[in-house]
Length: 325
Image (tube, rainbow, N blue to C red; front, side, top):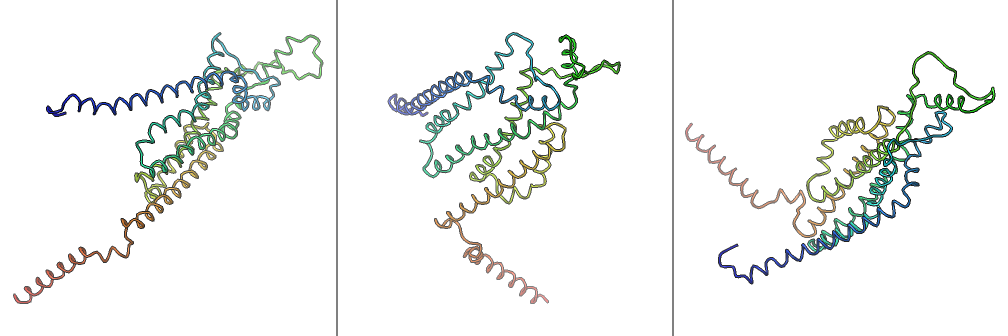
């Protein structure tokens, strides 16, 4: 700021900043209120949501022979905090349309009309792809993971022994695990918060993985990546996806191959989408006269003049060599 600025000029320059801060405060307040309302609504149905999220564990336990699958909590506040955690996650999901709309209304006035049209599809596609990835995790990956993890434990023996000790006059045909001296039985006594934790990790991990086409297409629009460049590093992407599959899935080849196939397919789709973006950009530049065809590059007047001068200099050098001889 120069020394010649008057107080009126300084007030005028600070006015837009104050207006932006006031607008940002309004948008943030509305977003927080929507988040709080979403938490309250999600808390009202937190128990059915918990039952839905833990359904793969229940199905696996029943398959392994547990007639009454049960999860436990070991502290008085644990179950309440588990329900509140579900309310936070799904409350944000319920409030996301409002939050995204408030963010968009704050950012949109600073964008050109064509930029608004470019970003709006990504705002819509991002939650749609996250829901698709979360559904894939809940209905495909989590059941496979639970079958792998719980397959190591003797689930039904403890329930059969408890039944034998608590029920009088047990029929002879009842299934009772005989006593043995072979050592301890490893039995699953699942905790609610830990079982929910692994389910939510799968949902979030796959939801983020399914953002790959959205992210790469947006980077392609910004000119940060190209279809040719993505295709050139395809082999490195395959290695990275394999490492990702090994980290976020259980040590089960089938689950890892499912994740690798899905994410690599999304990578190939991203290459096609980026190539489509580049094609549309080139067509638009040709229409506006900013982009020449490859055939026109050889008829560049400057390059032609440069080539002629270079050829003339070479002829002069050859003539001087002949005279010297």
